[in-house]
Image 1 (cartoon, rainbow, N blue to C red):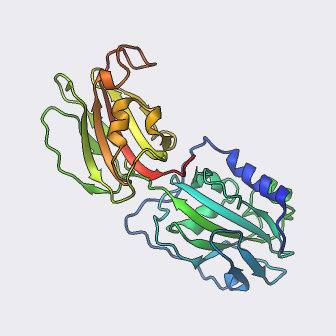
Image 2: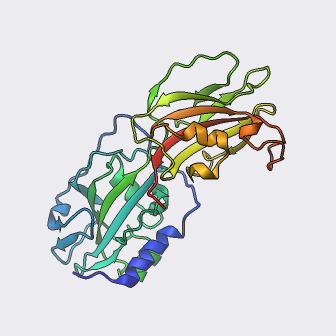
Length: 320
């Protein structure tokens, strides 16, 4: 079987070109995620070998045809599960023609920054949500794709005819949390903001009446058990920020997708709130002006503002 470099570029660009979108998905989050696959008899016609670190060796009886999406796990990882379509994932894909048995596209280039919500991959593979629901980081998933299960322009660009079936082998390299999943922590402190959460994890912040504290305040609301944020690599976070005086949100990632942040690219108070925290944690920080934007207007933020942020730490990115 062969790998065609041009097809690799087409498949990668078909996904990268969607960066910046955030589309609604049909998957729902669950702390008890159960992976259920349909009758995988069709997938038994496919043999997958090779290291998880490289392009898999895929053998298939040809001509191969399926009328519906069927999937099975060739390898099951022990990492974070994919529970929502908005979760950020890093996956590698090998696409094999059901007619010829040839590899027509593959994304294995060692790139560690191809991080997208699953909804963006859905634009290329419309049934990928179903096939990867509850799949865990470290898994290798074999998907039998019916005609039409690869977006038409992409299919044509890699040489798949309209009535061709295909096989996708997906290596789930990294899965980011959809929201902080750590243990709730007790915090004391009179006169500080209160945080409430929607079922999807989106926080609401209630700022009390009265003067803002003059010193930096950091509270860990949920304590995760993941890796520590050291600043050596970027942290991937959801955050919501508002000003104490106006009590209005001036910025949030919950309307788009999580942000990748380095500690040297944020105001000192935000960096102090992140450093030393663990993945899976939710942190509330009150930042006085001298550790925020000081006496300078910053867009919608008036000069001299005390800032309040709630930050969900979802994962760590690869080193730049």
